[in-house]
Length: 321
Image (cartoon, rainbow, N blue to C red):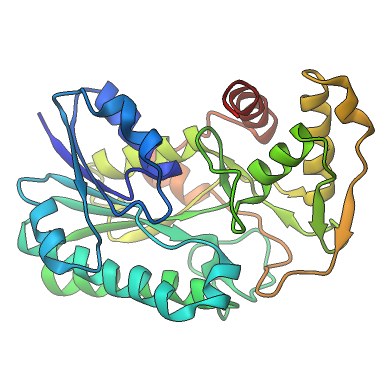
């Protein structure tokens, strides 16, 4: 029975990965300090004999050493997300996302972990205007958060070449889905808009709504993590992959789709007006991923389009908020 360490395992993506791999019969260790993760996300797993929870911080190297003992694979999801958060507090983002990442890499190397798969970010593309985004062509970072995620890629590349540890980075593109937190000042746009609609409030779009994103449902992310973890293609490791759908949606189209889907549950939502405000510092105007590399080397085939993912996410929020 293989053992997986999932850092940030109480968070949105980490808890979904935990649920999936426990269901597949793996032993799963969760490491989380609950800074942004939630205890209610891990409560369903606590009675599972194949599940271990370690409450700790990746900034503590001794904790990282403890967590990787006997581990076959690391799925490193722990990070301080959010571009605005990093602009407000770049030091903490750096400590968690770079120093904590390095701690985990060193611990994984010393424990002879088979493979280290980590959450990279589409923010790495920075000011590159090329569309679609291709893994080998990036621009200059536009935020402290983007810098930290790019440094992760550089460290992983050096560690794979210097120490022989297999590393795969997954550049997530605007992931959404069940368990994504709609609360707090740094809530992602989809759960935030859903919550506002459900409360009868007007969603507020930053800018004119013409900015576009490659919104990616959580099940596509789970698939990519599993493919990265299990691939035996020697050409598929020690690199990075876009983790996305390969479709671009404007914020205006997104909010209209959410309004339509939520109106099926409450007809009054159809009459809610949309508000607009100034653009947000550090935002990339347009984001669209090429997923050809993941298709070719990993055999990736997205299971969920944006529409299908939104239908499932809206249903989950309606039943759980």
